[in-house]
Amino acid sequence: MTTWFTAADADLEDFRSVCEQKTELSDYPHAIDVADHVLIYPGRLPEGLEIQSELVRALMDGPGVVVFRGAFDAAVVDRATAVFEDLIAVQKAAGVTGGDHFAKPGANDRVWGALDKFALRDPAAFAAYYDNDTLALICRAWLGAAYQMTSQVNVVNPGGVAQVAHRDYHLGFMSRAQAQRYPAHVHALSPVLTLQGAVAHVDMPVETGPTLYLPYSQRYRAGYIAYHQPEFTAYFDRHRVQLPLAKGDAAFFNPALFHGAGANRSAGVRRMANLLQVSSAFGRAMETVDRAAMLRVLYPVLRHYRGSVDNVIAASAEGYAFPTNLDTHQPVGGLAPKTQADLVREAVAGGWDQARFERALQQTCK
Ligand SMILES: [Fe+2]
Image (cartoon, rainbow, N blue to C red; front, top):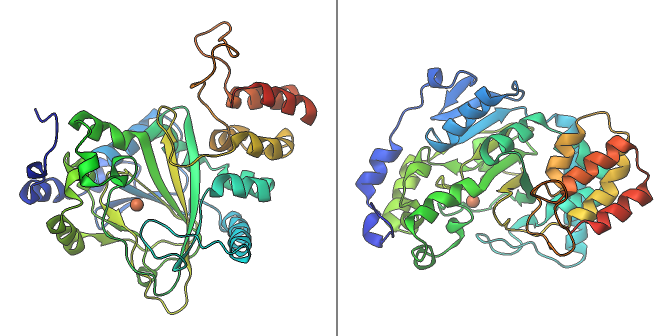
């Protein structure tokens, strides 16, 4: 059994045998199509463990990427797009160029920390957007009952270049030398700590550069070592697939899948996606989020909300009780203190006014 990976564990022939698989539609009863080995699902699915198990299989042992067609209503997406464009304009006016880890500052328009920025700017539009059963379904399937939503808006302008193939956070955001300092079982842990998603905010034909994926590459155990090596990058370039998306489609993938944004060769399409990085309650998210600030502005919306309050709470409130300060927040009548999510549910159900809710929110640890 390999307990520590070395550079010699990254073997292209092994990688090829792991990746060269065919996706059979009949193995995934809820899927409606297979395109370039990627599973395509409808935008709305039934709830329940059966579909959750199917999605886990698809992300863990299957192609590692699924697309939900029309998961977000176009009008809801457009409303969010208007908020994101405002945020970009404000950033530009303030002289901030949203650089990222791959592109030169200014080549793309990035809004980091877009989850709380969206909620603070337009809480009703935020609730309409994140009250999404499909989003909640796949987050619960991959991460379990509680998870930490974060979002980054990415606009790749015409002329934007492709990213180099990579894996994502946690171990994917390390150099090979750094990743090698973690034992092999932690390499197996990293993918289950995060779910990667992208919601298309515009139609994305192939010339606009939607994400490039290498299906099944998440299954390669030494992948966090291998993706740094040029022969693996070259293999990715020869075999990667690229799926056009329509506005409102959402793609979700295992963060260990080899992938990278494509080049935007269109004449004038600013390719906008809302990148969702959803963390396990047990992991550390990449970004900090001021969840208390979000909840203060969302609470008036949720008090009279007609949709699923639970979906909005899941995307905004802290759903896990730890870490906490056990001097001041001792568990009462159970093993864990109350979570922020518990508090919001209790307040909405009890019809608390804003002042009472804010007092109670301040008294919770986070
Ligand atoms: Fe990535």
